Length: 476
Image 1: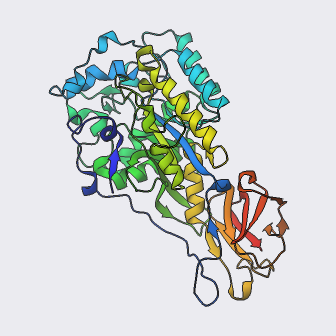
Image 2: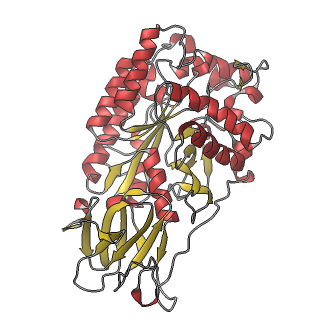
Image 3: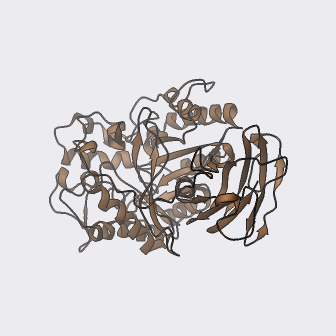
């Protein structure tokens, strides 16, 4: 299966020289909970975790975005300096606008809010070394910078995870001086960082610098996005560094990151890495969220031809997003902010509107839009929640519940947790937390499932509720 970096997705193989990802160490998964079999040890586990509300998650991951600065315009000459022999960096960048105006951000964010679209939006804190978002942005007034950050907080934060895409997305910064490293080469670009082995602490310090700048702007954050091949040579250390840095700066319970794109039949479900302490009061894990498409709106520089039909066509009968939905896999589409703006033509944005509209029309009852952190949290609950049934049907938690009782022990809370359980008879299911039943309402169709409901099916019952951290007992 292909494990593609995003820069491999949007550029030709000659554009960025990356080590073969298959040859690099993957982050270790760590602990996993025991899943009990029914009495006798035969058959399936007593409960099957389903997609939230029995709906396929949709999400939209946007890279190379920030306040005001057109990353396509400012990245191009810096990439050309580091990779002077690559024709892809010899484009007429001086003719492109230096700004992606706030009017476009407002238009995009408002449209997405009205149509339910959620996802991840990068906020590069020191974009292309132009200026620090938490200090000054040369070329724009202080008022313009503050207004742009306010717009991000008001329009984007409610429906999008905001990530730093490291510090500059171009030059590597010396943390001691705050300046770009003196050498200019592919070895000193964030897309190739680090060029030599780095410890977890060294990587975490670099990530923490980016995260702290975002925090200084009063913007919440629970994860990071890698610029290009950032961290390719230190995958296991990078994953731990994400956990360390995000927890240190923001105190997030479940840090996550976006780095990889799934190709072909490879799963798009998030991966849980470095899992530990599941039976303690301080469980730990870091989630790697994956996208599942290429960038077909306009690429990282906003200069490529738009092919929105590759995501899905006009009636959502074909395209990569349709393929993922029909597989019941998270359908996560990827693009770059300049590729939606397209030097002011907004052809990528218009194509995106057509894609999102087609998906919403055809799959409104089978999908739901989710942010990156929501995908990560559901994956953690799905994979790490212990599911037990004691012999004779007594719940493992000792609550006294009997008759097909199942105990869930969750290291992480999760809204809209949905699972199918066996039906012992015509009765209704009960969900008990601290020996107290949660209110449940029966619905007649999968499309009506939401937290606090249940659905009877031929092969059992489906229960949807907000899963709390710790033990929960379900009686069927």
